[in-house]
Amino acid sequence: MRNLFLALILIVGLGLAGGAFIAKTFLESTASMDSAPVIFEVNPGQSLKSVANELEEQGLITDAGKLYWYGRFKSADKKIRVGEYAISPNMTPIEILAIITSGKSLERPITVTEGMNIFEIAEVVDKQGVIKGQDFLATVKNATLARELSGENVSTLEGYLFPETYNITKYTDAKELVRMMVSRFNDVYEKTVPKITLTRAQLVTLASIIEKETGAPEERPVISSVFHNRMQKGMRLQTDPTVVYGIFAATGKWDKNISRADLLNDTPYNTYTRGGLPPGPISNPGRESLLAAAHPARTDFLYFVSKNDGTHVFTPTYEAHVNAVKEFQLNRKAREGKSWRDLKKREAVPSKVESRKNRP
Image (cartoon, rainbow, N blue to C red; front, side):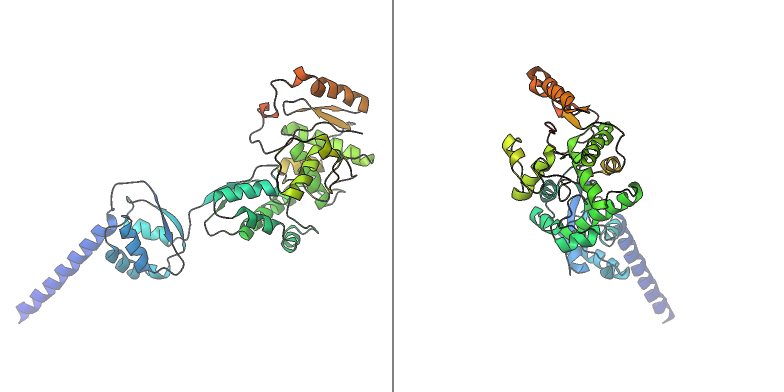
């Protein structure tokens, strides 16, 4: 009897040892040597058992049952998180389980460059395929949300979406992305821009114009000085990008070259037909343009004209400005073979319209 009892103990022990060996072998092995990642999605309400079955069906593990029981042992059935995960067949079941319980869903970058307006950002967002461009636009145009996030009495969040690269997941919605962008703007603004006589809304509007007028970093404070000088003298700003934005605001797009008729077309944003700053920002400025708006260079310049290479000629008098226009705009040879894209100092080129000329 004693020998039988010992034999049973030995059999059970060998069985447990064999089971432990099999489990250890499974958990430390891989389905294949293929390192190519597969996008694996855990959906809302999905159980550990169904996840394990899908992993086996996709060739990411060799035994769904063993992963299920190991997951139950590790309480993974309560830790699985909804998300998209990059999983390779050469990962062990232990590594795979750690990934799908991490909650760190696959990220997709959305890059907003300096000077983009809300319509252009909506196109970028739409192309990423997570958030529809029309949903993004509806969110940034929500006046209640705009006032809540910006702290300003504004109707849209144009100007308050900080240009940067944002990582979102498949489950990020328009409001969450917008909150991220405005939060980043508020953080940069508070740490960068000193308090001056302009209100924050005015400064952001001015910075948005500066951002669209030049791609040369060293010119931003000088461009700012022109606008500050003109405002102090009661002169109209007469800047082309505001005219373009007026058309953007009315139609949602810009697909032509600016014309004299556009300059004469009175909109709330047309700084040729209306004095002072436009009613709001015309783009989303970066840190340097915000600083330039707050710290203009000390100059007596009132005019500037494009040199056709991304930089400008600045002049203090209308007579000097007219001469600059003749030299760089009316002289065909001065324009041939030149483009604002030639400006090599620019790291990223946002959509912009070249300044034609400022008129008195």
